[in-house]
Length: 172
Image 1 (cartoon, rainbow, N blue to C red):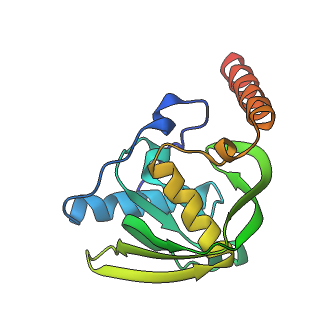
Image 2 (image 1 turned 30 degrees about the horizontal axis):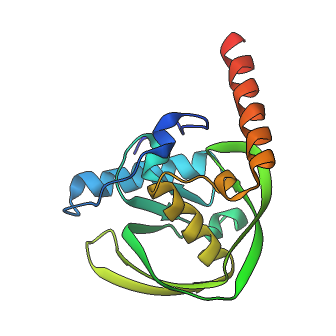
C-alpha cells in the first residue's frame, strides 16, 4: 500500500476521461488499496483514480472515516441508472481543489450499478451525503470537477486561487 500524491487543479490530467476496467484483478485491487490509503492520508471521504493520475473508472468512498472509523467501499465502472428529479444542495470540497468549498446542487437520490473489489456486480440506492459523494466522484471519471458546477465567476476565482497557491508552493 502506497500513499500517492493527489493531483490538484488546474492540472490538465484531471480533465481526462477515465477508461472502463476490463478485469478486476490484483492490479486493480492494489490500486484500490493505494487510493484508500491516499484518501485517508489526505483526510478525504472519496477519491477517484484519476486524482492520483490513473485514468481508470475506479473510485473509493468512506463516509465513516470522519468519525474515526474505517469502512471503505470501492466502486469499479460505476454508472448511475436513475436519478431523482428532486434536487439537494450540499457544500462540497475536493482533495483536488484544496481549500475551496461551495454549494452544489445535485439529484437528491440515485440508483447506481458497479463492480465491487471482487468483480461482482452490485446495485445501490443512495441519498444524502452518499448520493452526493458518489456523484461527485463519478464526475471525476468524466473529467469534471465540482467547481465546474459553479458559476463562471466562482469557478474562475477558484482556479486563480489554486494557481496562485501552486506558484507560491513551487517558489518556496
